[in-house]
Image 1 (spheres, helix red, strand yellow):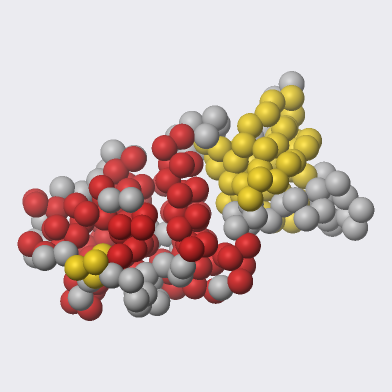
Image 2: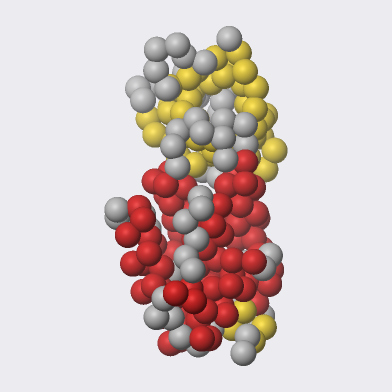
Length: 223
């Protein structure tokens, strides 16, 4: 049975000398794994269609024996080229993908998580991620999973509590413009580190690299 959907490529890896496994995040089916047969051949119809964080319409034949389905056709919508032009952007995107993969079940529809990741990638293409944008993704993602922290019940300072609320509720441009002091960045980094480890069992890979860069110029102060 051939099915059609759209998704974001989270990860790819070789299966054989000629085939590729492609991991997707879709609105309809959640995380899906497909095998692109012959994708590594020079004249493959998949050539140039399958790369990290591409957004595409695709069709696949569902396997009856495993969770690895056969990719049939791909039509790319968006390639997010800015992510490949800047290491900081790429690190921010890679960490978000790792977080989604670690914290969600395969083939469980989570349309809000798909839309959240898509919005985050689009914002990263606009400018490199300041630490607060990474914190915002973590907080919004946890909220969608029903795991969002109740900051008023923590030892966070009043200023940090306000920032947590703002990052959870505000849109991506507003999150990017928030001004955090170095002390607030360190406080939120430690708090979310512990919170993620507590709920997920371990820290998703790439978090330190995603948080390595200080914020940008456009800021909006929160009291």
